Image (tube, rainbow, N blue to C red; front, top):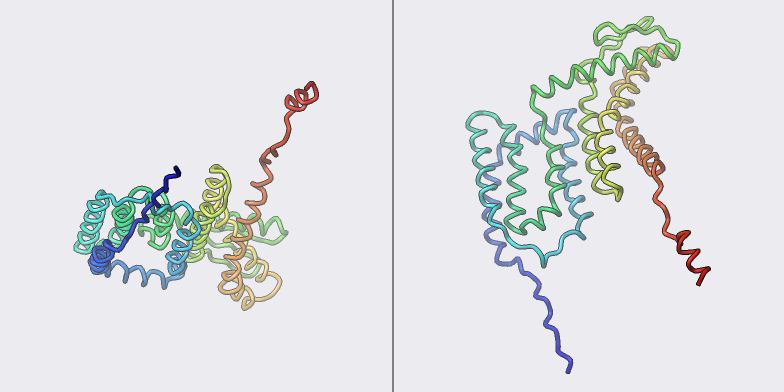
Length: 300
């Protein structure tokens, strides 16, 4: 006699709606000042990509949706202390006037919420999106200052070398490139830090979208630094060529507008070229009959 199997009950999240709504209201109140600080930072050129980061994080969750099986998720109370500690850090940062710490505490707070709702299975599904949200938070001023000067120096020296290779008179003095009639000042705003943050976000997000071996994903993430340097150097070289072969107005237009618009497409193009090269470095062997199998078949 055939026994009818009972259908697996689908977990209902209805009882969690009201507690989740209350937690959300409290967290909005706690992180309100931090979010206001972030929106102000996103209006600056170096972090203008901040508005796109949450949208891409949601897209990342959608792309990874097959990894989330609702029937296997279970609430974990380990999320509660994580939420509480994050909120305490945020409030303490507000009192001490260190708003950046409050903004960074948002990430473990979100992890705590996910852990509370769906446990570790939901954390494994969502952790790349949570980490990716870190790209919307500005770097500490001390770290920015430490990174800016080496980036400026590398951009200046590499651009000078390329201009000299192209046959132009170019001399680097500090962070200034002296041409035959004009000078190009590689200021802090032109150090490449902006492109480094943007290309870093692109590479990190791409690494979790593509279906490639782990080592290729690591290489793609690490390549954000040379890609940012390459695009910034190309921008400076284009400006130097315009100074030499056109005039000051055209050079300034290229430096501040045209090259700035082209840096993002150039970074995307370099990432694509890198992916093509990586895909051809190691070719996966196709599944087929082996030599031993062929000999065994013939002998049979």
